[in-house]
Length: 496
Image 1 (spheres, helix red, strand yellow):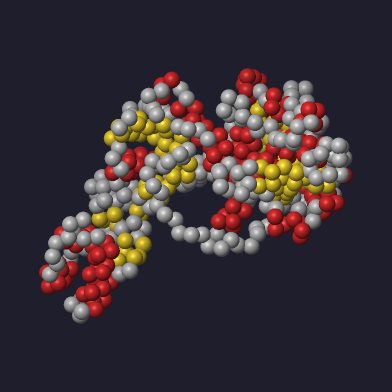
Image 2 (cartoon, one colour; image 1 turned 90 degrees about the horizontal axis):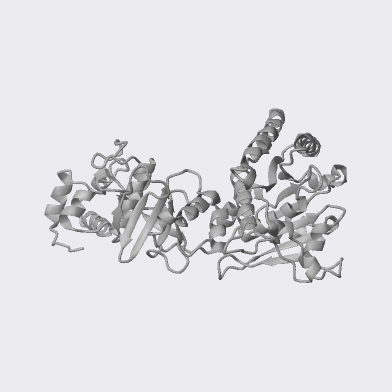
């Protein structure tokens, strides 16, 4: 920025004649830091009083529109120049209240902000027709043609939203795009970033708008432009409290053990160390994780490699009830998932009382759906007789997408039964398949085949044609639980 020679008398006169920070910076071609330095020098030399600086920099006086940059008073609900509506709040730096803009309130304004930001970075911006679905902004630079989708939500963007944008990029109508950027005003759920970090799509980029810039949450090789440096994190806090999850059954064959194991796998991919406690008398969970299948009393555990190279990775450890000790394992464990006995009274009361959340998988079986809903309600009541605070969820397992019409009828029937009971116990919830479900897959059906062929224990997360639907489904379930419970507080405590 070119600087002109500044005469103290002229500068002081301008201030006393009512020029604000933005006017001074424009007239004298100086940066905000240099303006702050000049204020300090003028006060030290006695040319200005500190009270004059304070009046000039009242928090109520200086704002900057994030799109057009015009300074404005906070009495405006929208920018008088470009009409953008934003939550705007100043931050003080030295003697100056820095014009600081937070996220625009409306989706249209947020699109406009991202478009201007990309234009400043050298991209040619084209806004698609109003009825175009799948993307909000088109960017062109050199040989790149980029589809940009933006979300101005209060909640973090979740896995299904990312998957939907990925599916758009795979359509023939998106063939002209070399890549796709998904820009969020509120960031991404851990399950969503874990999904892309494990699948590693080459054409997808995730970014979060922060302080008039985009911080890149995911990119395969290099970010579109460098991230703003982030200060070194503070020392880690004491380990957070362990969260307990019980997985129950309403009848045989609903996939209780499979759900418990793979939900543990999803949380492990998200960076949590998980303990699985096998309460089922058959001990199938331990058998499926035994490092040596011929040693029934041996170690049952699995190392889950990190989704991002350079991270440490996590562990899933399977224990019997008498092996679990929260004092011993608590420092190394974030989440405990219990594969519960189908005989409800056989589950230890001291563990059931600790459950923060309970999951009851069920299938959409026409003959059993009415009976299952009765059994689910009885299971709810039994858990509640032991535990007055746990949140309880019904999950659809083995979902067959090819039978949508029949599924709708069966789902409505089951949902009505659960909703009726929820009037008595509001902490009981039906997870609608639109929010989370476990789809039927051969990978899950044949999970455990390693016991037969003698290979090492593994989860059914192996990719087929570059994608693992079980991994996607269980990450989506973990993300749903984070959004509807206090599990995400584990992550918040770890990041403090």
